[in-house]
Length: 328
Image 1 (tube, rainbow, N blue to C red):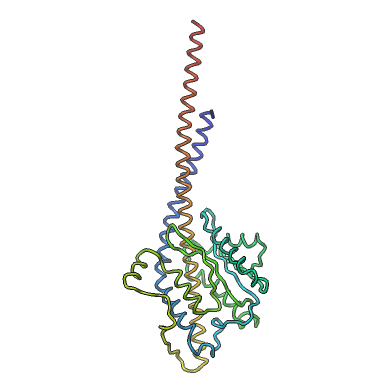
Image 2 (cartoon, rainbow, N blue to C red; image 1 turned 180 degrees about the horizontal axis):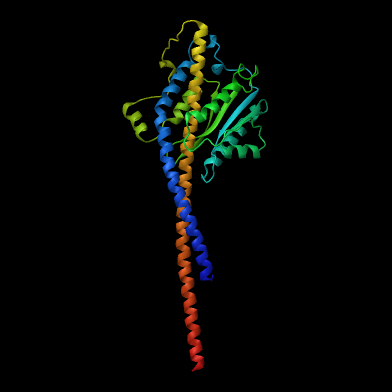
C-alpha cells in the first residue's frame, strides 16, 4: 500500500489543480454570459442585414451593373479559406472540431482542389499554429482578437478579404476568386457546431443557408419566432423590390458596392461573434469537467489516505503489542 505521506502530497496537488480549474470555470462563465449576450443581441440586426443582402443579390438589373462582390467568376483559380479558432487553449474540443470540419471539407472537395490554388487566413493563434504545422500557404494572420469581439477588430479582417477579392484594390490582379469561412456556430451553452460557409461571391442561396443556420433552437428569440410565425429565411417568390437612388447607373453601382461591402462586413462580424460565444461556452464546460474530475479524484485519494493511515496505525499497534508480549 502507498505511504500516507505520498498520498497526502498527491491529494494536495489535486486540490490545488481543482482550485485553479474552479477559478477558471467562474471566469469562463462570466465571459460566456457576456459574449453570448453580445452574439444574441446582434442577431436581429444580423437577420435584417442578411435578409437585405439576399434581396439585393437577386435584383433583376444586378447582372448589368458592375458590382464585383456579386459577380460569379467563370474560372476559379484561387480560393481563400478563413479558419476561425481561439487564441487560447483549454477550450475542450472547440478548436479540434473546427479543424476536423475543415479537413472533412477539403477531402470532400478533393477533385476541385486539384484545379485550384488554396490560400489560408487564420483568425486566432490556434488556427495559425494548426495551418503552419500543416505547411499550408498562409497569406496573413489575425490573432489576439480579444475576449469580446468589436466591429473595430473585425474591420481589418474584412478589409483584407475584400481588398484581395477586388481587382482594383489588389493592384489590378485578383488574389482570390472565392472566399470560404470555417467557424463555429453557437447553438446553446452545451452545443456548438462548426460550419463551412461560402461568403464570396455573394449569392442568394448561400445567404439563405447562413440565415437558416443561425436561427436559434431555443431561448427567447426562438420562442418569439415560433409564437408569431416569423420567417427570416428569404423566399425568392416573396422578395422585396428596391428602388436604388440615385437613378444614374454609376450612382447605383456605387451605392450597391458600398452596401454590399457593409453587409459582407456584418456577415463576417456575426460569424466571429458566434465563434467567440462558442469558445467561452466550450471553455467553461471544459473547466467544469476538469473541476468535477479533480473533486472526484480528491475524494478517492482522501479515502485512500485514511485507509493507508489507519493501516499504518494498526501495524504500529500490532508491533507495540508484539514487543510488549516479548518482554513479558
